[in-house]
Amino acid sequence: EDGMVSISRALQSTDFPADFMLIASLNPCPCGFRNDSRRDCHCTVTQVERYMAKISGPLLDRIDLHIEVPAVPFGELTTAAEGTDSRSMREIVELARSRQLSRFADSRTRSNAQMSSRELRQYCPLSKKCKMLMEQSVDRLGLSARAHDKVLRVARTIADVDSQANEGETEPIKIEHISEAINYRMLDRQFWS
Image: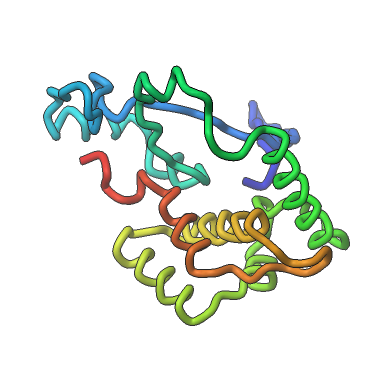
């Protein structure tokens, strides 16, 4: 989280830079078919809980996005894709990144993911409705302080992507941005048991 790793051997400790992005995947259960509309899962709740317990809570807490990726139906595999093409998506991402670079021009921070607690308070002000939704999420989903901050960072990024604001202006975080960010915390929702 601080972009460094400390290696301690004998009586010495050395710090190394360790700024990386972790991308991981796992099946929803030992057989891999939980919540699959085409195949039956035969795993018991105990088997699923044991399987998911292999991933520690503190590790999951440090992962920003948890999403389910369902199987793609055959019909969708054989038809032309709809939606935003890669070139347009790249332009949207570049615009969002430029908003972040402008926001943090006078800081060591380079992206929303790196915001400190102070920067979260500064750049992620929430409306009353957004605060209520965050409070409900913390209470009902049992979000940790770390997960709360990750939701805010992701919501800030979603707002940057969704922004219609002019260059140099910041789009406020809306309730739909908070809601979407919370939905990316799937493993916090006891979905697997």
